[in-house]
Image (cartoon, rainbow, N blue to C red; front, side, top):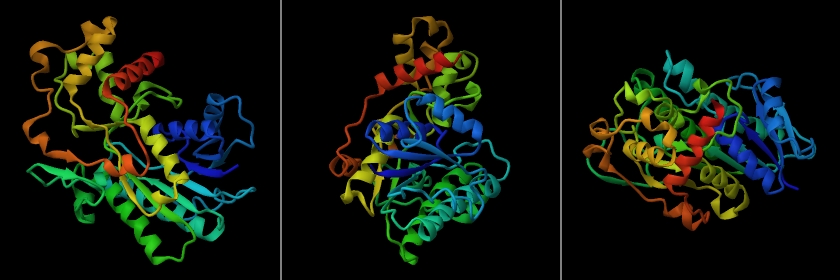
Length: 340
């Protein structure tokens, strides 16, 4: 039975990765930041004993030795899936709140594997479309894994949205640099999804803690956009969290995925589509939803058409078949309503 270390275990993506790993008969150790979070994850999977699901407490992922103990296991780990990274825009200091955690934790886990986990052969890291997209482009362009965001450290420190984009880009570059510069026994694979939506699988103290990409759906269900203008989505590409989760595990299983980046996307979407799908499937929410002229600015804007995409590598190498938007929205909104 293959043993896998999964970081960020109470997070949105990791919760779904964990479900796939357990379903496919892996033995998993999940890193969480507290005993309380470990209890919640265990509670979501009550049928598994410690041989299949165990935990390592990593309180501060920014410390250079954060993962030194977590990577030590008996039986030893053969793969590591690293999903832990900040994804939110409510920051006061880009360097402290976004850049340092993402970059330093990436270096920390790779260093720990090198020092203390010699049996690890595969490392998979969750990056993001933010590490691919060039936000300064103004013309249509077809993005793929070959592209890199040209963001600089100075821009990432100063620009309002530069922290997140810079953290993803610079952390991923740090990972590839580490592989090139260090003597390692494992291969690296990175994944670049755009905004990820999908059902809530992890424990939330409240809907305020929902992942960033699902907030628009939450706010539509709560009636926020009856009083606040529903504009276009910031990035008009999306992917279902369950496809992202499966992709992580397939990268562990498929040797041909080693050493590659994978741009994961199901394609374009708009705020209008989200509102209309909810309107169709949730009659009880119709009086909370914008309609008619209120949806006028909710389409993909003209300048949003610049986001072409090529996701062929993920289909050809990993064999992914992407879920469609309508069932994803329905299942996600239902999971949000279940939290109310």
